Image (cartoon, rainbow, N blue to C red):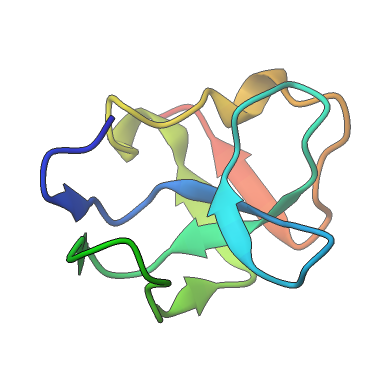
Length: 83
């Protein structure tokens, strides 16, 4: 898990309840990336900015992030670069 904060760049999926959580499986649908790091305090929801489209260098994403290059379906709003 994360130690006190969620780092920026974590890929996120949208749940059925409308809330976002980290991508954790190849079948997950990429909704975007966490734009800024967020401190975890308590067990409540965290309100945070989401990058919804753009060019992302996957080699610069946090080590704890799921490898988005292995997702079953690509999100057409993102260009994923390897360099």
